[in-house]
Length: 360
Image (cartoon, rainbow, N blue to C red; front, top):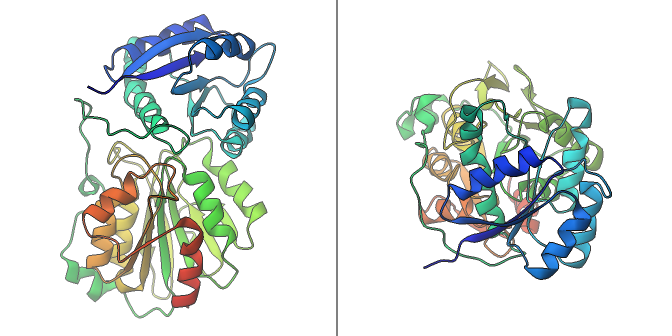
């Protein structure tokens, strides 16, 4: 029998500590071993019993969450999930948290009703499980437990026969790179994009991330990379030297006009319990770009993107999965490899170079 994942909750709000304890206690794979109202008190608890995962607020007395995160990651790394309240003007703090080593950043659940707490349950528990198997900690295979149903991409885009993409992909000279990632993906995407120059094919990206954070994420990458990076808006043109990132809580699809590709931003149900969903993006790219596409699936928990990568390959696209050694969480790429959906399996730092060398 697998031991439950041990969690330490750090938040100055007693109400939030109680709500998170309630959420975690309802899952037999999770166990709250303690709570703390500030990071300094948390340190004494960690010295007594090391947790597998920490949940951490940002705004707290005595020491703010980001300072504590920086300290613990530099001395005794423990997988950490930020669960905090972010105003739009503070969304850059989430990107800083990722850069300091946070596995995930989530918005605090709305505690105004039990229904709202229940709605946040699946996402928060899934995030903790993903953190528990991140590379800095032990690797386990967690058994499946009953959860909310996982919808497929069909609820957003009907599936066509593989020949459909071949007939509809057009004769555009430019390639399109479709990329998906989840846990550990913010840094993986940065590494990938920083290795590309202004002549690279246009890129469309889904990173599982809440809606307040994707614009700051895109803006930060735009500062770091040679290519132009932006959060997607309806009708954005997919062009060389440009990467377009799906907005949080919206699906991203590829479309085409007479002479170029564009993107669409759609509402709709969660697919594979995610919005945006990698499977939705990949299906649209398979149907619109077909053999002109390059599909890339990076680190992440779960299976979102695995079936989509297979659809891309069946449509004539070249498909790549990140290898296990370089993945923070070898979930999504692993599921794609199981389906024989990846024509190439590469370490993260080799993917961009391979594309540049083989696809002009």
